[in-house]
Image 1 (cartoon, rainbow, N blue to C red):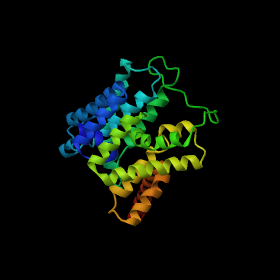
Image 2 (tube, rainbow, N blue to C red):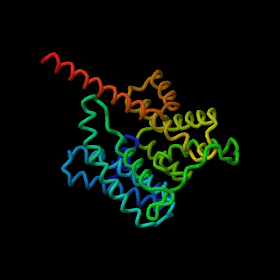
Image 3 (cartoon, one colour):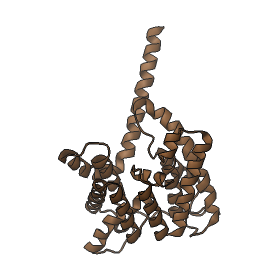
Image 4 (cartoon, helix red, strand yellow):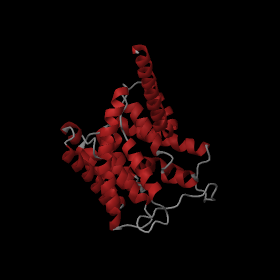
Length: 284
């Protein structure tokens, strides 16, 4: 289960997973419970479905369920310990396994990972099917564009950098965010450095684009940059100064990563279909 937790940051250290779970329970016992239920539900569903044992033990079927459960808890306006929320958490986490299996077999043809596509699909459908006035599963309303917000100081903005690492797991408290950063450091010091750099670059990019102050102070402007910088600088490429600079640059563009991946998959699908049609006409 702990490995499924760390798969959110593409790590596979059980001790790091235990520290991250401890951080979630420290920040909010309710959020910690939701995360635990989500990763267990998706992992058990994968076992029942007979998914590859190496994928199950490697946590590949757990992290999407955990993200779904955490975000459902964050978006919910019903408050903590609203037990009815466990119903969509269990259903959404279990459905992630079906989507992951189906998308993996489809995207493998073009050497693309399913990654967090199941999480994105489930959470978007959940938000679309509910709403702020839903009698059973209400969620918070979006902040109106241009709403006035109080300004802060440089210290508050700097505080948002470690919070950006914590926001990878929907954690907005400083102490638990530092513990999550420590869990990343335990697995890989290189990943930890890139996580901080990516969050800092994402925060600076938010400042330059006049992002809402609340997003800067809470780390919401930095977590995408942290993920992008970690992936490029510490996982997918051999570390060098060139990849290091590329990783820092990716911290500014990580927000669009999933869009680019989806567009690439669509383009490749269209290309394959057109080639098949051309082959059919040639055969006729």
